[in-house]
Structures are given as structure tokens and as C-alpha cells.
Amino acid sequence: MTKLSVNVNKIATLRNSRGGNVPNLLRVTKDIESFGAQGITIHPRPDERHIRYQDARDLKKLVTTEFNIEGNPIQKFMDLVLEVRPTQVTLVPDALNAITSNAGWDTITNRSFLKEVIATFKQNNIRTSIFVDADPKMVAGAAETGTDRIELYTESFAEAFDKGDMKGIDPFIEAAQTADQLGLGINAGHDLSLDNIKYFKDNIPNLLEVSIGHALICESLYLGLENVINMYLNKLK
Ligand SMILES: CC(=O)[C@@H](O)[C@H](O)COP(=O)(O)O
Ligand SMILES: NCC(=O)COP(=O)(O)O
Image 1 (cartoon, rainbow, N blue to C red):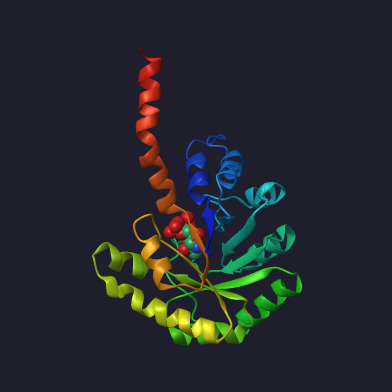
Image 2: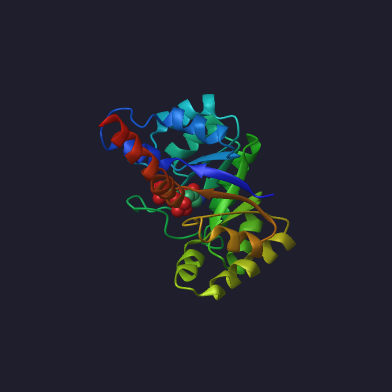
């Protein structure tokens, strides 16, 4: 079975846009778990424009499913993860001001750095994952770091799928086979959605976890809109 980990960054972004506590991140997270999600993902960035470091601490007290923290392992992030001790840490090579994640690690150039960081987290019993492009060379490089898992960066698949190009899955099948041969667990994420998730899952059978945020929150808006409009109309009669 593939676990669904819901990325709640977008809930925090909406909350922060008004400066108050609506929507309430902790309440929404609790609801997401009670609706059956098997994990919660957050991706705090150094400017804390969506998830704040304090959110990570607050969520740790409340999350009962798998808690996954993603981010670039700068010192501040390392300290947070070692304090919070989530189930899993996913290392993502974000540039400081990136709007969203836009590349996987070069696991060959960064091998010794990643090896050191992975060792630190593993010594603290935190499962590790490395965000990589669907490239067997990068998957093989990830295996050299000692990581437990990789997270396949799925934007190129999602973009191809959207254009009707079914071949966009091919590099992911190859990368997943390499990961399997090397004993790495496979996660995936970025731009996965209700439209493309079944095709991805059907082609990557050994998929352990997907983390989904942007599309899932947008879909929740669309699918909930009719209900809420009607509730307002009823109150305005
Ligand atoms: C690694 C990854 O693909 C996700 O964590 C994604 O970056 C979500 O973060 P944002 O919500 O900041 O786009
Ligand atoms: N690791 C991917 C993730 O957490 C969510 O990415 P997205 O669904 O917001 O693109």
C-alpha cells in the first residue's frame, strides 16, 4: 500500500495571508488525519512564509500518523528537525528564495555533505529521504549516502501527463527499478493530483509514500465550493 502524506504548507499560507489563526493549522491537521491520511508533511522554508518553525513544534505534539519534515539542511533546519524528531526528514536542495521546490539533489557532487547529514539524522532514529530527479545516476548516488529512501521529484511527470504525454512516466519507472535494486525505499511528490496519481501509482508499484499538498488543497476547494455556497444561500433566505 502507498501511504498518503498530506502537505499542509498551503493551509499555513492561507492563515498567514490574514495574520490571524484562520484556518487553524492544528485543527485542519487533526481533521486530515481523522479523514484517513496516513501522514502529515511540512516544508518550512528559512523565511517561514508558510509553515513556521513553531508550527513544526506544535504539530509534533498533535500528529499521530507519520510526520515528515522537508527542507534544505541548513543549520537552522537541522536544529529544528533534531529538536522535533519527526518520523522522517526529506532533504530538498531549495534555493533560499525559491517559490517552490524546483530540482532534486545532485547526489554525486554533494555526496559527502549528504552522507554526513544523513548519518546525523539516522543516529537520532529519524528516517531519511533525499529528493531526487528521476535519474538512475542520482538514485545510485543517493544510495551511496546511506539514506533510507528517495523521494522522486514528480513535476516533469505531472507536466507531461497534463499534456497527454504518457511517456513522461518512463524515467520514473527506470529510477524506481534502480532504487529497488539498491534497497532504497521510494517516496514521490510534487504536483501529484487526483488526475495523475492513479497512473503514477499503477506504474510504480513499489511506491511507499506520496506527499501531496498544492493540488489536494485546490481540489478540496473546488469540491467543497458548491456545498458552502448553498450553506450561505440558506442562511441568507
Ligand atoms: C519537496 C516538494 O516538492 C514539496 O515540499 C514542495 O516543495 C511543497 O512545498 P511548497 O508548498 O512550498 O511549494
Ligand atoms: N514532497 C512533495 C510535497 O510535499 C507536496 O508537493 P505539492 O503537492 O505541493 O506539489
